[in-house]
Image (cartoon, rainbow, N blue to C red; front, top):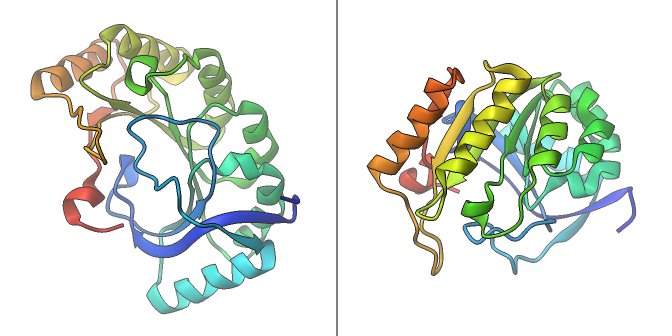
Length: 234
């Protein structure tokens, strides 16, 4: 894929269902492909992608906003949008020129790619991928580097927790956030059942994780599930 094009599976208008902007009307641009494979991921892995140039994608965003707007922002989601950092460097100025706010949804593991586009982004919704939740490796170093860049803009951190999540991972996430800025919102998101995956944690677990964050002075911590699943929207 050339830097002038990106593979995108869908572009649509809906309601943000996660994090601190839950309930906001957004245009979603879903990029195909990711550098991770979390077992709780709810993005269809076999979805067909279509190549978009910056101009064609901007035109589609413009048409959707005209028919379904106004929108709070344009959510760049995935997959992992920062896999297409070179494309974003060309596309984001077009969004800004036409008055759209950009909202980057990212797994928070590609700090070098974020550095390339941070000046063009308005809001960063980043994940901390807890190793006991994902079933994979730890990305603490990458997450810390990423958050130190993301804090230049409006940013919040989200961690998906499951029945396998260890409190030590939550403690480490909280420690990293507090070390950058304890006022950064921290969202604890219970995993939603998807396909054969069903490891939604119980109330006691969620309260324990929230208490860890609050007692360690990360004061803007919340438990927020995937609300769009409850609403039955995309």
